[in-house]
Every structure is written in structure tokens, then in C-alpha cells.
Image (cartoon, rainbow, N blue to C red; front, side, top):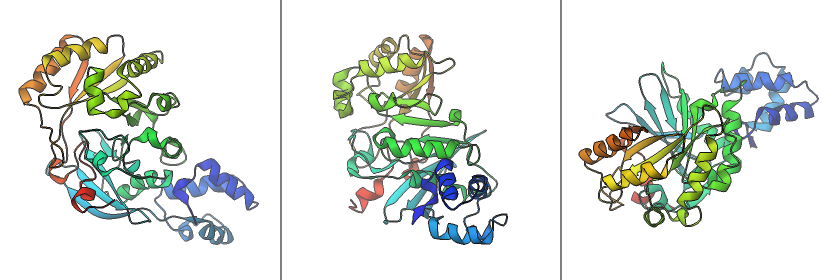
Amino acid sequence: MTSFFDLTLNDIEARVEHLGLKRYRARQIYKWVYQQDTLDFDGMTNLPKDLRFSLKGLFSLALPEVTESCPSTDGSTKFGLKTADGRLVESVLIPEKERNTLCISTQIGCKMSCRFCVTGKIGFIRDLTAGEIVGQVMAVRGKLVDARITNIVFMGMGEPLDNLQHVLKALEILEEPMGLNFSYRRVTLSSVGLVDALRQIDPRRALIAISLNATTDEQRSYLMPINRIYPLRSLINYAKGLGEVPRLRVTIEYVMIKGFNDSLDDAKRLADLLRGVRCKINLIPYNESPYIEFKSPDPEAVLRFQDYLVGRHYTAIVRDSRGLDVGGGCGQLGMKYLEEGRG
């Protein structure tokens, strides 16, 4: 049976028309599910009974099962969700003053093999479907009390643009005004820099974040093997092109690793590299794990790095590490696969 969460509004309209009904019925169904959290067709009381019966034979409203909820001392929560085939997916809810951001996954495992990332140690298992991506939002939303998800970041397990078809469909579903109605300004896609795929993303569909993390090709290729295919210059040229879109700027993510890329010389090269790029820079102190040898930078090194960039007139923000005590920090998702030998 087809998962309802795999389908856009246009898909549902086509199915409803095939039943010989008017397209507005699809909009009614969409609103019941996405705006009123109704996960039972029998509860959609403004639909004819025969239509409700037909819908039950066409679509499944099952969501990934939330199997664990791990609250961090910093207020964030890591959620473990089980897919229909029994695989584990992790999402992290990050509350802040004026927003609640949900970090969602797009793959189980990852092909990119970035040296600093636990998910890359798992290897690639499979892509998530659009329904499994959207399902994370719906399943976590169902667990919230007196709170709502305001922002979505595609920064969890996997490389979003390596699963482009399903991610684009998930974006359409998340941003549908008749449904979840997220503004594209509240949705961020983070990529290691698959430039060919990045060029297929309409910059009005999602904000773009590029995981840069190094200032020379030698350094970045060691850290992120994908750099051998898409070297730094190709990423910078792409980012400069985004500057042609009014009021749009790319986010540059820079994971700082002690003794590897956290020196003042690195800061100088980064500032030079990004000259002419309309951007903001997120500095992310590396989150340690028992499976990777890298260490977190000294706080003094982080502040020195940030001060240099600010002095060069860049917007440079040190991003707080959240959920570290529950394995929910940036680069930590998927540790259970390693702990339990899954794959």
C-alpha cells in the first residue's frame, strides 16, 4: 500500500480524480492530515463514507515509530525512529528562544566517508523515501506538547543531495501551503558540495549550507574525499553564483578540529577563499566520539578564529554544540549502528 506521506498534493489530486471525484477533495484530505494531525480516514468527517472507505484501501497513514526519546541536559532531544523495514533513523529537536528546529535525516548511513562524521563510518545502507523524510517531521510533531516545529534542517544522517529525487519531493510536501506550509526560508539543505546536484536546487526552495571545513584542496580531500570530484574552486564558483539572487546568501559550515584546521593561518585562508561570496559562516567546534580520533579545538582557538573573520567583515557565528550527552551533536548521529554492529 502506498504511503500517504510519499505523495504531493498533485499526486493526491490525481488519485482522487481517478476515483471520479472533484480535486478539492484532495485538499480536504491534505488539510486533515497535515494541519489537523488526523491519521485515521474515518475521522475525516467532511468526506463521504464511501470515499473514506476507498482511501483506506489506497493509502497508509502509518508513520515511522518513535522508539526512543533521549532528552539532553541542554534542552534538545534526540529521537530514534524505526522504519517499516526495522531500520533506525535519528532526528534531533533543538529548541531555541524563538524557534524549534528539527534536524532530519535523508539516508541510513552515508557514502561520503567524511573522516569527522560517525554516520560515514556506518557506510551506506539505503536512501530514505520522501515519506520517511516527511514522516520524521510528523512523528516528532506528534510527540510535542505546547510547542511546534518552526524550522527544518536537512543535516542529520546522510548526504541530502545524494538522495536528490526523494529530497526534492519531500521539500514540495513540506512547503505545500495546504499542508505543513513551511516557508523555504525556514528550511535548510546542508551538503558536502555535490555541485551538479546543488545546481538543480531552486534557491527559492531551500536555504543552502555548504560543509566546507578546510581551506586547501589537500586538506579538504583528506577530510572529505568528495573534494577530489568537486574541489574547493567549484564550490566557491557555485556559491558566488548564488549571490546573483537578491537578498540570498549561502551558509558556510566549518567544523573546527584541533590541530588540523583551527589555526589563524586557516582563518586567513578561509577569509581569502570566500572573498566575493555573499555568505555567513557557522563555526562548529568538532564533537568528539569514541570512533574518531579527532579532538575538539581549544575555546581560545575558536574565539581567535572568529575574531579574525569578524575583523575581515564576515558574519561568523560559533554554533553551540547541542545534544552531545545523548549522541545528538553534529557528526554524532548513527552511533548505535557502530555500538551494535548493525549494517
